[in-house]
Length: 346
Ligand SMILES: [Ca+2]
Image (tube, rainbow, N blue to C red):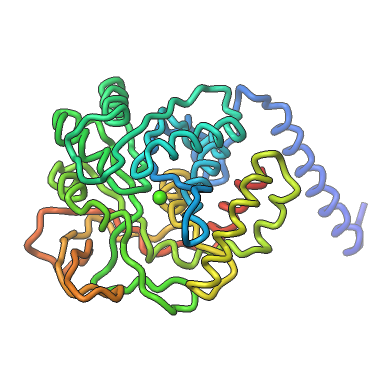
């Protein structure tokens, strides 16, 4: 039988449709015990077991009107990507007691993993490296049981206490992923660049970063430079108001934070800073990195309006006189923002 051109096209279209539906059926029949092969061509892996250390403060009363919300969004994102990361334990730092309670509240709403995730209180002062807390003891115990990466999205006091008191555990830490650091002299001017802010997690406890880098543990820095263009605007998060009990609480809590950002940075929304270090663990292909880049703490004039000098955590291939190295995430690729928003919708 000879076909004209139109008939040939139709047969091709039909064949493609059949193939697609067959593929769909094949995937549907795989069931839950067998996971389909990922698009990248690698077989889907077990989730990476990680420890989360956080200075979560979402919803804490504050004279400025609101406190950071990004640790909460990062926690929810980690729980929603349970196929990629499994939280072995969570420790709190800075506002240890408040953080403990609000973390347990969020776990009650968003932990659908079927696993109990323990929470531990850590350092309140950020000036007491070496003073054991529930957090440092639990982190050390977890590291004795298994080798783990630590996602540390606050000041590093708890991590430094573990390394100072239990240096033999350094080899049990796969890597520490933190939200800090900059390329030399890069000012941190989010939003419409009206004000310059500091490198908060580093500046709250610079000594803790010294302890970490001196330990030789692999460090991943994913801070301002990488995160600043990931922006959650009001319209991105409106849907939370009509969601679950947790979503409604989150929606009410985000409102004042968005307002504060509008007043201070000129934009009606905010950067979820801490989601990019988590993204390094869940979606590493969405970032650009400088590998094994030298790291130094430099002291020079405060760029945030203060009169004195302050330390800057900086990376540059020009630094020849430092033994410290890091993987430095300097850019987020398009699509990561959708991943963050999508994790709140799942
Ligand atoms: Ca944080």
